[in-house]
Amino acid sequence: MGSAGQRQPHRSSNTSPREMMLGLMEALKPRGRVVLAEYRAENPFILIKRLHKMRTAQVKREMQAVGLRWLKTDERLPKQHLMVFEKVATQ
Image (cartoon, rainbow, N blue to C red; front, top):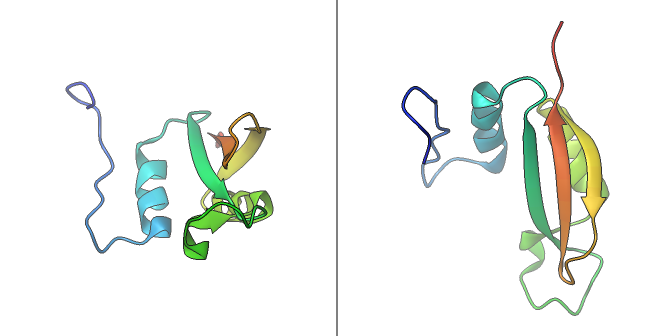
């Protein structure tokens, strides 16, 4: 939960992932960070529906489209990519 005065993104059950990220971007300060854990699409042995898996290139494209810059990917998790993005500072 956020402290008093902080805007929290709202996600209704019919909000698309893109709409959710755009709402998050409104609340995120310049240079604020977002960390995503995405199941690895490259691994066929992860028993989860394909639509819940992503490749790192796809995640990077989608996050860039909403104004986030990729900083790093941590590959320590066995089933997921842990990816760190930063909101691009505006001039």
